[in-house]
Length: 202
Image (cartoon, rainbow, N blue to C red; front, side, top):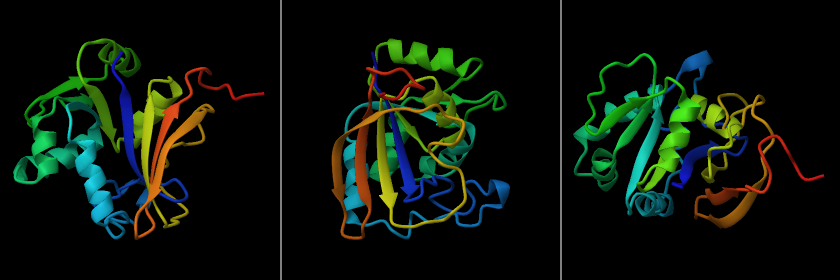
């Protein structure tokens, strides 16, 4: 079984919307795009390099795919860009019919079944970057095995969150935790598979 890993940049109140810039996701009038870039440091960058150092594939929602595809193909000299461009990319979309970023393949007619089949197939671990709407569906279905959260000491009070109010309760196990000089928390959690989604210990 392949591992599905959600890699998420978060504020301390759980917002994950538009971390890289205002143009990423301004939906619902979100005005704080780019909040994560103000808090990055060498430790966070090294964490990103370590994350993409091995073999992996990617699963992306439509909006995240369009953002990445508009930037990384033109930045193959960046180690992150080089790894992203090389990786196989699965795109959860019903609207995009043409995927110009190399090594991209559409999934999503039944995203839960499609992702379940991906996990059961041969291959490396699968990384989900961003893709907040897609994550809600996968969390509810119990398909995310690991959460890697990069939490910055900022409170925004509004915006899309990693765990929205409609996802069922899940139990996570902390397996790694450290902080950077600028106060970013780098956290790694595994899903507690002894309990199904929606069940918490009594």
